[in-house]
Image (cartoon, rainbow, N blue to C red; front, top):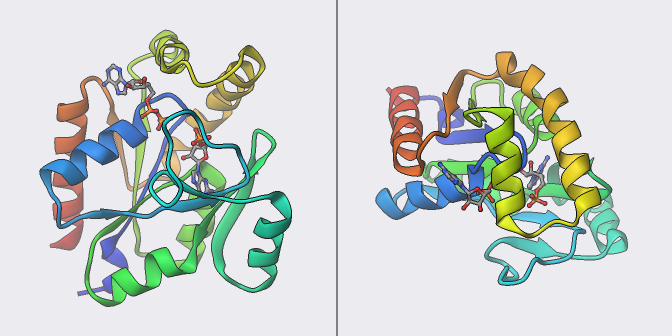
Length: 187
Ligand code: ADP
Ligand code: 5GP
């Protein structure tokens, strides 16, 4: 079996519910793991170092890129986000399924590096519901909400590049659909 099938890339506009669904998925199926990314954005209240992200300054992030420690990265709404190599390689070698929740440019880079990875695009039920979720999360100021909503319109165009598309109507339904797609991908 191709080891790259253990690599699952999930994208979708900010506020769609990707992180919520990924956390539910690993609660239901603890054999699956979620990659922790590095970022230069500040932690939101309640977020924890090494759990939600590895937080670092832009300078530290650039040092890690130069040292070849970042598999893929991008700048999104003014901050760096990237996948540390160590989050992926050790898992796929051991046959552990690992989920990367990353935006569309990162997903394109992963596809170039791992052409057989399983890519899943998560759509919100509607644009209005996306805005409602983003606002109800209460983590962004108005300018950041506007930037994310405007980027969302562009991001939706990328759905066609993914192996599958799912809609996040309810968290449990979406987590289950993604689980089924992961299982299908491993057959
Ligand atoms: P993302 O990781 O895509 O940016 P989050 O997981 O942070 O999105 O979810 C954004 C907000 O929407 C959160 O407040 C979350 O609780 C809520 N949410 C996620 N999924 C659903 C859903 N299926 N129905 C209603 N609200 C949801
Ligand atoms: P947030 O600030 O809401 O946590 O994340 C903003 C966007 O960055 C989301 O679309 C999220 O999926 C994406 N993201 C998180 N980590 C990574 C990463 O390692 N690489 C890339 N390319 N995008 C990421």
